Length: 530
Image (tube, rainbow, N blue to C red; front, side, top):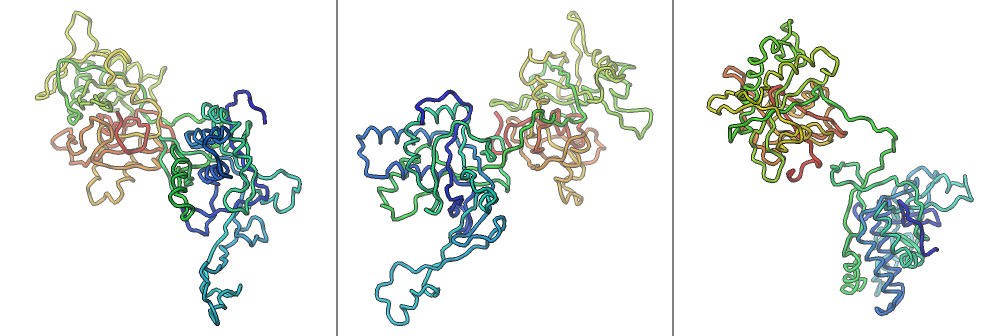
């Protein structure tokens, strides 16, 4: 094997199964269940056994170098895995059809203590007797079943690769020489029925199993695989010194794996809702406008726009009322831009975002009408800013904001970037929540998502407390715009669409007044976003 190799984007540890069979029982399931794919922690323990294949002198330079290679290997991230096609088989019985899984076959073996057996008791030692014996299983996997059936007698033995990429691959290649010496003495993986040869591979095949990323939520279809972590070698050495082979070594850390998605040259664009561009306005002259009073603040802002715009404010895209009373045209939405999602978030409303419908694109009639109405809020430097009269909440001033030039809370890109996971800043409101009709609150959320052009969430959670920092509990929010409005329930929501979705995301009743506004998240639920 060459001592050096050119930099490679990927490298792997390859195990060639010389007999085409991998024999190992699951450590996380039933003892008659096959372990598949081969766990990297099992391969690591085989390498540790190879390291101590004979009595080693701690001062031996070769031993020190090989042990250092295993210490470096356990510090690598969990590898991706390439596995060939396989089908279950119960050893020593092989299936008549290579693709047909065998039922678990029990083999009864006698116990170790047979001293003093005589007379009828000695009959327990007969091969066909099950009395006083223990059932043992020898599960395994038949690799490349078509090859094993004799269709290709000269094909190379099937291989399993543990693959690393980029910087992790370079760290593996840095210890390739001593690690290859260790791998050269690995003769089997699992039980002694599965003979193997192992080595470093510089051009591994594409993996078909990958570990879950930190931003992915586990699913029941994921596969549990044991992997070594930092300190694993020392733990195995300590266990050997304390137990002297009297007990099975402890299992390694369990990571979840799932099949790799097929690569595509052009990934599909993220889904979009009916809401589009957002224009921010800053509120000045008021120290505290709490997020719980969203309906009053956004409603007051809408009234200020309509009063200043005059005839321009009567356009359907601005006010939301068309010539037909039954018509519901796409129109502007008014959302709070609050100080939330940061480590020291306060929940204060810093400004208002005016959301245009996504159907109002450049070249359509509605866009100039909407922009003309918003232009009424602009004043010259010599004139006073437009006041926003909110009664007992105060009278802040309205100033147009520039994206990226003011406080981060006024950056509307926070609400429009694509994400799979979303959490509410203002709660989802529905008149059917907490009523007799609410037999499935998640159904209401899915219906609300479909109403704004979003796909059905693959999972959603309704909760009283949002994971976004600075957001008040849902029962603190005002959910009536007028005194005669029906009482509505509200809950914070956490959404998993299963695919990237581009914001802004607004769902539920009063969505045009900022309720049901969601913020992208990197993870599903545990913890809060800083």
